[in-house]
Image (cartoon, rainbow, N blue to C red):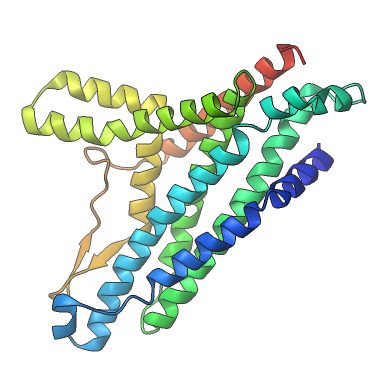
Length: 274
């Protein structure tokens, strides 16, 4: 299984995914060197830098979420189906390897690459934030890192599961559709509060169980902490998924969700023809 994970990791590098990850790191770093503009120029330099870096870290974590999910989907959506079509797996499986071990090796290899890339991006974000605003600590980024890691874990698991019964375009499309369902929670809760329609709250809760993006987003926002404002005070960042507070049981649900998706994918892969 570990050998397959290593081979999957090498395959990702062979496809030049490493260069794409490096390009994302450059994109993350470039955002920290945007010059100050607008009302920030009227503030003392230290205060302006603190506000700018706070915004940079906040938006930077969104970039890490996005590319962590995108890399997971892109690498996992064709990990099974494409190798079945090429006949690669039919030569591997006659050896003393179970299909579950092959599936787990693929999962570990893809996650190893994406999580490693995520760690590099987070380090770049931290270093640039520290260089731009050395007077304040930015360790809250590392507090949020486990929450950020949940994005590639969830989306890699989903895309790999879909890859067991569909080709790359469909597996990627289903993964994006699942993301849309999860993001709908925030919109539905906003509409529920605006129009006082209880049914929308039910739909929002259903979306949160079908795809736990909201749970991950609320915890990420909480771990990032308060955000500095122009008047020298701080405010709590507004989560894109309001209406509920993050609770520890969220992590248990996400873990159960990943395990269930993994088992479903392993069972489907175990029963399909090669």
